[in-house]
Image (cartoon, rainbow, N blue to C red):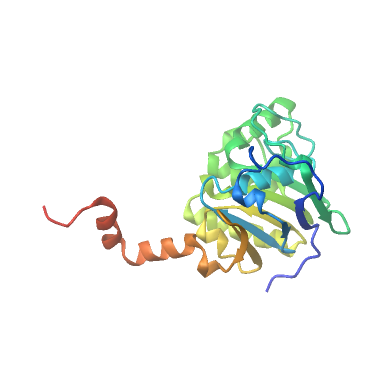
Length: 246
């Protein structure tokens, strides 16, 4: 059983009295509008939900409020090639634990290429085990997990499974557990039923009614994947309108 860590991030929510336009993005997203207070598990908190439900938006807001750039990396990476950043971080209130984390990283699937280029430009690749551009996308993700994250840290991961095969997702799960055992806390936005199976975690569902904590077996990710794997031909026939005739 994993150790229960002292959390570096206790909870987060909209700052009381903040002037917010609930008719504009991102506050018009139901899960953001109704977010209330998110309580984080000392080990791992997962954000799940449909595309557009707001999980990556909230993760980005947390990252910016913690001092990371929107494209990810450590807090020393000051990189911004995209202007589409919401102002959610400006109205978030974070409750932090004691002591502060010794390490930290914001891993964003869609912008890791930009971070890798930045690391090459500034000549700092040793911490990653070499240039990330000399690896496949999936290998670069694993290099971050295995080489860059040192433990006793607070790590934010946005869809880390995006470039990973099922076997590599299992390897990532093992790496996450090793870092948890070394006093780390994770907040992860994901669609992966493999990652979501991690037992020492809280799963927060983002949907049209706001946020709710759910059990792994009650997630759509688990239910849909299990149903499809148990009945592939039946589900394919329903999806493709194939009655099986030649």
